[in-house]
Image (cartoon, rainbow, N blue to C red; front, side):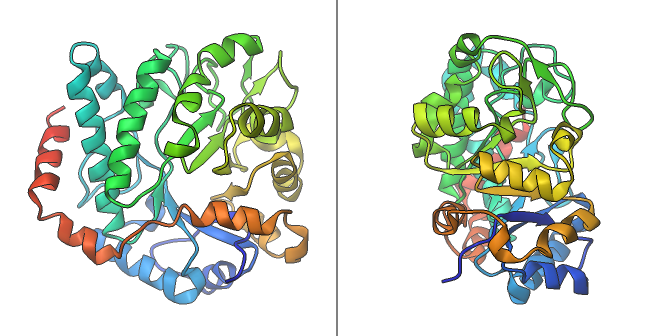
Length: 343
């Protein structure tokens, strides 16, 4: 069994180009990520994924950002998953119902993606809603870290019921800063003790047992480390691996985001994130950047290949896609869809 490379890359369109196929087959590539540009219909998506598997993508996880609310890449033919804030609002008056809805939302989300043979969605968002962020907002489950931990655990339980792992993001927390890290590099000026006592708590309470992967933030925590968390050995190795004992996959946010640009060109950003402790890095939309990464000799693209591969392979979903397609005729699935679409 070959080791998986550290690059998770985007694809060009609705079908695979010859360049897509060549890049998928690169030993430097350990996964693929899909976007709205790759989606026209459920049937088309299923054929695209079959083509990925047939052209070198078998055994490489296929990802998507499919959280619900504003961030749901596939719409037509898929259940609309409500923004996570809705679950937090229900929890204010009925926690048991909110936990049940969170589990049902995760189950529906995962079952529909698994029916298309997609391995994992980068969800849930564990960022706290401090009421200030330009990018998090209603993607958050709430401001109370204990509530966020419980609701996200329920959602990940729903994912697991359909054979899918989860990804906690954006470690150690993106909710306090105002700026959108897609467009700028935000700075969080709070002391370490304050961040650990609030934003980090959902990671502490979920840990490796619930979260098979974590995505660090492109945010500088200036009282802690001058580097953004994604490039910080302190956050990734001292805190996440060391203090929290986390042994799942650490996957960078998109290295093309403005919050990552201070680390140099795309190769330098990737090398910096991998050296800091990431197991894999995302490069999603700029195909010249993707080409620059995958064209490197494979021996130059990160260390600890066996450990990285073990962590990334944990993200492959369980069970054949056909089983999840059949599951959508079940009473549990229909009841879950009815419940979450009523929010």
